[in-house]
Image (cartoon, rainbow, N blue to C red; front, top):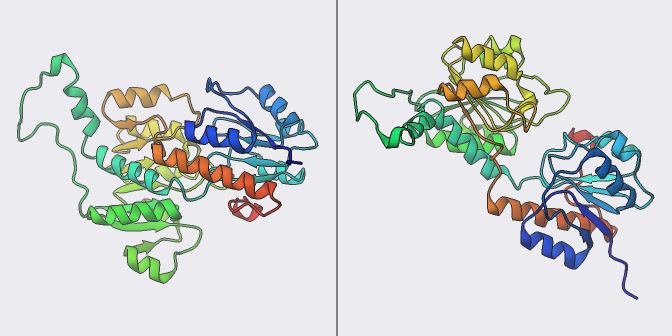
Length: 333
């Protein structure tokens, strides 16, 4: 007799190839309309499911997990970050949590590098000029639309994990000098390969960099890591790029300092209260002071398919009685 397929509830629309494979392997309930589930709907899902496949838009908190049914044993997250999941509450109930480590590294590093280029060189300002007034522009001039070169500048990377290191490799090719702050220094051979300078003091690094790139995860320890106090340490002519999580930066303080000229500008792909974007940041974007993107760092076809494939592998391993390859442990948080 064939084993009963596990009931897998998927909270958002996934690539067709992934959804098709899930239907083949599992009793998969899909969200073909891609409408975000409410907290009540998430609670209903964990009450009946064996597995939940949430995304970053779903808040899986202790209240949702309190509704977990007797068969609910796995949260197979679609994505790397798990700050939207109360992992401690899940573990306390014997629920395993997995993520999809490593899939988004190169795509997010590409987007980080794009913002590092876009902000000092005023790319979005220039592009906007050609889409206004029927494409009229005054023509080339020696003093028009001047930005700043990045070659020879110092890049400070906050968080030197997979993505931070991938950013460093790209940035070196653009002539940037690599500096970084991390909980621990990199192994000497990696540091030598990247020609990277380690700062154990974040405050000291912030005061010396031309460009700062936020590439650390959002955890209780990194909430507002770039606080109003720390932002005041940053040089007035420096730029800040964030492709990690919006909560790592005090967004209100950042906007205020750019508005008053205490910071040169910023490139942001993430926001503190997504999907809401601060009106102050929108105003600064219209003025050409910041570049804003709608959380596109990992938005490639390849990344979404690879992420889905990892989710499937984690579910299969768990259901076969094996340890999932991407299990999230308390020590990782």
